[in-house]
Length: 72
Image 1 (cartoon, one colour):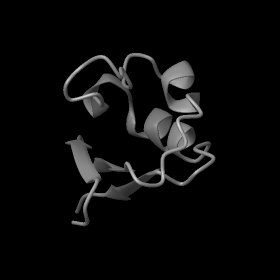
Image 2 (cartoon, helix red, strand yellow):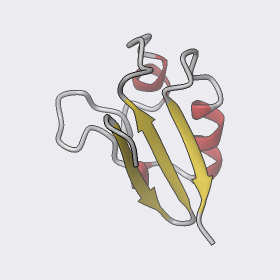
Image 3 (cartoon, one colour):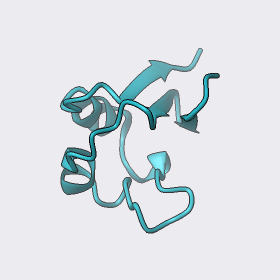
Image 4 (cartoon, helix red, strand yellow):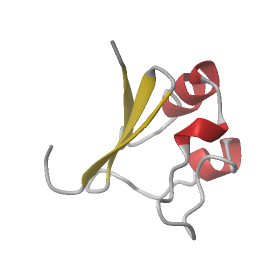
């Protein structure tokens, strides 16, 4: 895993955040505030949304800082 890249796993999906790509548009926080909370550590709680909700939100990330992979 590269510098500034963090992974957050839950129920068959891993959310990947690349801090170096993030432009802080805030779409993630606005769309799924129960998952993304910049004031918390860790700031991503992937288990607070369904796999479909996570995929739909991540696909809206304008910078590509958020991505995902399905666990096998």
